[in-house]
Image 1 (cartoon, one colour):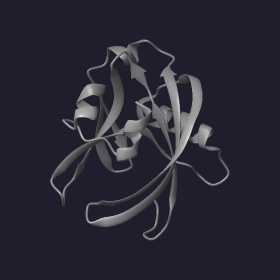
Image 2 (cartoon, rainbow, N blue to C red; image 1 turned 90 degrees about the vertical axis):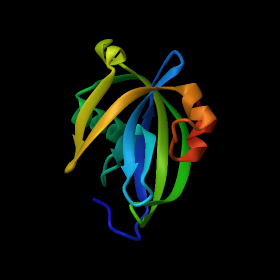
Image 3 (cartoon, rainbow, N blue to C red; image 1 turned 30 degrees about the vertical axis):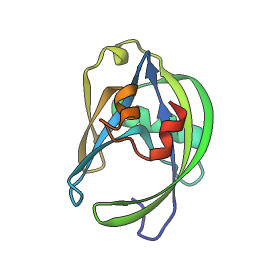
Amino acid sequence: MHKEGEIRVIALGLIRDGNKIFLSEGYDSVKKDKFYRAMGGGVDFGETSLEALKREFQEEIQAELQNIRYVACLENIFTFNGKQGHEIIQLYECDFVEPKYYQLQRQEFTEGERKKVAVWVDINDCKSGKCRLVPENFLDYL
């Protein structure tokens, strides 16, 4: 877990299937706001962001990734559950190795103590604002 006042480095995977994108659902209990974000997680000391990306998908949904391509570095300063956060995001485009992940309606997983859900979301719903995608500049890569 990251400490308050610390900049966190994370690796996120952008996975598309036609006009859909695979996203993790989140909820801010202070703002009473549902949002979506690409799956992935924190880069541990001594590992590359690419290694972190593969490890996070393996830990969270037991998925192997392929066709991994580095896309961009994004910076995200935000407030979540009333606390300020600051992330440096290493963004990768990738595909699932196993076709079964493209058939999922929803995939439940655990992140630390929290139970979470990953779903396929229509890219147009993200662009129109119907589904809130974070960070907002992530939309530039869809």
